[in-house]
Length: 342
Image 1 (tube, rainbow, N blue to C red):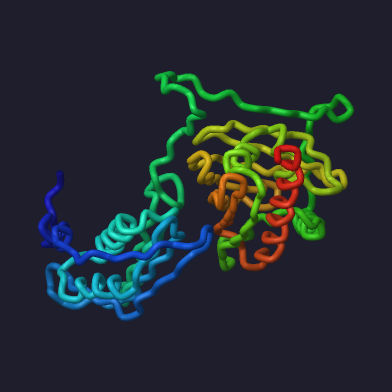
Image 2: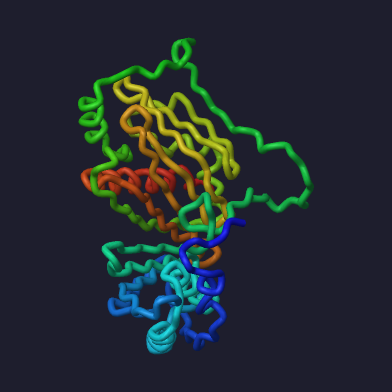
């Protein structure tokens, strides 16, 4: 290990983490599939080496499961940091761990936006479940389907459906980008691609209720025969390719032929928690080289009702409305495709 050259020691790095923080109280949640946002615009702490104060805005966002944060006790908990020597990076992670311990949320995000010191500002974001691969954390695990665990190197088989078109191999036709985007915008159920990296990015969040068990709804998004009926399918288009490799690290490909143009949708599965959570990357290569992220949380209302929250992150602001319309149509189409499952 290389020696420290900044004057900061391992003791500085661990400072504040061994403190006994006051308990965060909770109260019993009465609803499902909604978000809570809490912010402390006057958060303060202390640099563990210089003793100088740090100021910032601390934000807690989470989806409650059975418990909600009680704000008075949370305020007293955050007061503990006022005279505590601790690094800004550690603050966000420590608060996240304590909030998760208290509430056991579906997911949680803690963001520390600290004011500049010496001309440099810091923003630290910690998320639960934790993961290096998925935006909401929790080390991705390959899902199991109620079978005994057996050590094997064999990967799940890819489910694939290809519809022959005049007995010719599929060719993705090059199209004028601007014209294609205009055509895509006119298709009601098309999910908009990401734009250039300089445009403002937003999260598109949608909720949909299925009158079916969560296991049934979750399975539909990974079953190629069902998913090809609604995933990126347009009313007047033709799904000519549908491929799903249903595992973490596996990929999917859907090609919908629209007015003679083959529109390809590709992605990789980043997280699977059957039947609670599904996260995947998403890209339309013909229109953008940027990949966005879609996270779906499945929450049971009772044994025959499943609430789905879909969050599409990294969407260009100019396509926010179009993307929301597209996902609404996809979720409605999924409902229609699952009618015989009720």
